[in-house]
Length: 364
Image 1 (cartoon, helix red, strand yellow):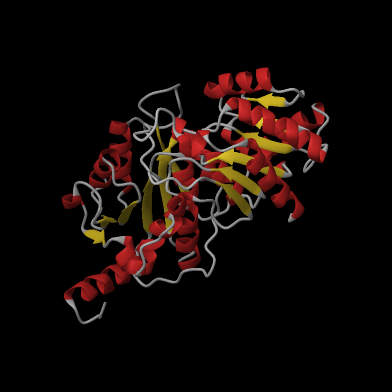
Image 2 (cartoon, rainbow, N blue to C red):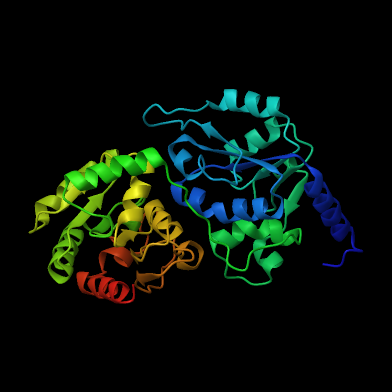
């Protein structure tokens, strides 16, 4: 886009503003995977301007993604509307606190109603979002559609988040990564737990069998069979992990497994990150912990269901996908509109997943 055009002049002015502002609030609400995949942008912003104070507003359950990251000055936490009590602010308090901080600029990476309200409440003179967001009147600057900025259609979520910097022609790393920085206390707790279980770092295989949608969750019987086969093939213990509210999934897998595996559903997110970091190989569905494994550089196998593989595949790590190619894929995934059961995930057999695990282990 030529700098002499009106749009080019707007970009130039915004870039100049961004070069001089002292503080930036980045709003990244919703899921664990979304949070992790925002890290490359935060790192790129920090590398461009190490003096810029970057604060992140995130949902409280995913605080561990941001709180120890050196690119982030402060992590502000929003309590979820439902679920167990969490640290952080309610929405009204968050609006007041953001307003009180008087941010020079706010970059909204989500675009939903709540994040738009928080953006507006900031009172910032530079409120930045994407043209595809609802409530576009809230923003002073709307980033064009990412395919137009990148000049190609197929974009990963990481690239979508980085569109802001590409649009402003700010420097981008040749290989944006996004690193999780782990809590030393969690590292000590998991070290003690592994030792008590007779496990050493890199001596176990980790399987995280859950995902947010049933169209992305492989079956419990198949996970049990896979764990048995992995134990027999590699003579290594298998650990299953889940969030506390997903403990029933691990109980069901344990009922079907032939070998005695370990089932840990009581971990804090900080502790799960350490458990992933210490494993030899990670196996999971398309889920937040799979993105954590990618950010931690772990060899991994991902069993793929309904979601868009191009948009959500593991980023910048060695991995092997196991997926089908059905005419109805991808889909939103909230329900299966094509079959009685979501064949995209339910029809994946154990053998190709085992073969992918063998391939990843042999190339490690």
